[in-house]
Image 1 (cartoon, rainbow, N blue to C red):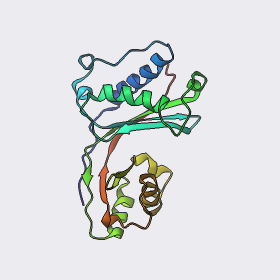
Image 2: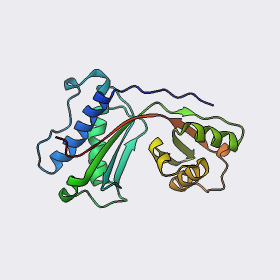
Image 3: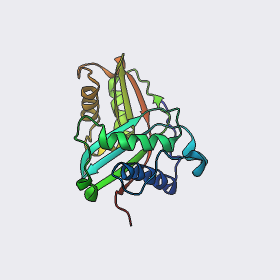
Length: 197
């Protein structure tokens, strides 16, 4: 089994990333915000490259979730772009409207570097996932699906989690995990309402 890195970002740093996401959406609606943030205006760790996801919920229901596993761009700029993409370009949902802002919550998740989960048996892999609840990337050729660790809140058993992720990736539910590339990762995440006092 592969070890994955632990938390790297403080609550204050994650809050700064949420400000970036909030301002990206605010700018779109003509509210006070900023264009693509300048890395020189932020802490060095927020200017380093890292994978991230931005998740939007309206009244507690998913409204958009877009991200990248790896990135060559500064993290805060990636968050800015992914916030706009989650709000207006997630094809599963209609674009966010100004009327939804009063019940909108934003969540930013920064990914650790994924590690390969190697196992000789499917059950060993499922047992590991069930104990640790990491984020998971399943790949088979060009097919790939990603679930953040937060998905464990809704898909509570390893079998249910993996079956849903295979479906998302377009992989047959009957395909053994030992025939797939299974990568795992942790996230540092923080969630806030769009309107903060």
